[in-house]
Amino acid sequence: MTKLDYGAFDALTFDCYGTLIDWEAGILAALRSVLPADGADGAEDEALLEEYANAEATLEAGPYRRYREIAADSLAAVARAHGGAPTADDVARLGGSVADWPPFADSHDALTRLQTRFRLGVLTNCDDDLFAASEARLGVTFDWVVTAQQVGSYKPDERNFAALTERLAADGVAQGRILHVAQSLFHDHAPAQRLGFRSVWIDRRQDRSGAGATPPADAHPDATFPSMADFAAAAVPD
Image (cartoon, rainbow, N blue to C red; front, side, top):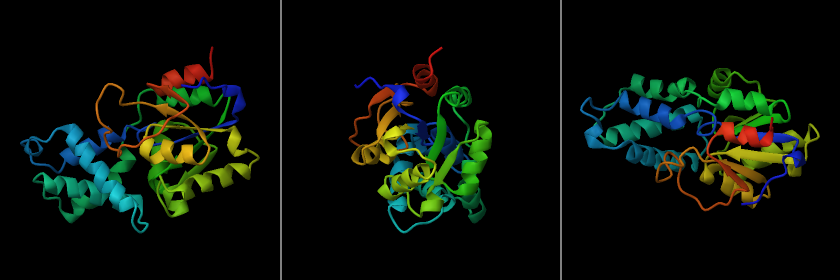
């Protein structure tokens, strides 16, 4: 694994859900709220997350729809596959639950530390209003926010990264001075690698097998850390 020279970068860009926001906890809480009380016919959390990943990726690869609808339909499909019977009101609530998904415990402090050295951006597969709620939960204001709603497509589509590059270039930050930081190999690191971005993997799932709520992918980030706290300590040492 290459040792990064953090002085070579002016901006850090982040995936949000899975990296800064604990979306797997949010997904599971939303699912459990509409699954049978006897425990989702015995389905384990990892199986539910994998099913969600497959449903979401299929919908995101199709014609653009807002993430509120993608999340609602993906969660409802998994729930129905395990004996749930979500009503129309339940489905609407599932989509809106994204705004309530919790930050990881280390996200705020890590971002605050990183802001002392870098400008920060977000490239997220989300809607403007849902991300605004998550940004408020994180307690940090980002310099740039590029959402799927703004681009009209979802990562790993390269158009999202092109929009990010264009947005930062308008503020004088060249792609070579951007370091992308993310948890998902599928949504972030694989396309970033194809496009020549340097990237850091926040491997939130290091102690668990499988890919969780993201499809698996073959990608080789430039550096790996188990948490945002560890990454921030390396990038902005005491």
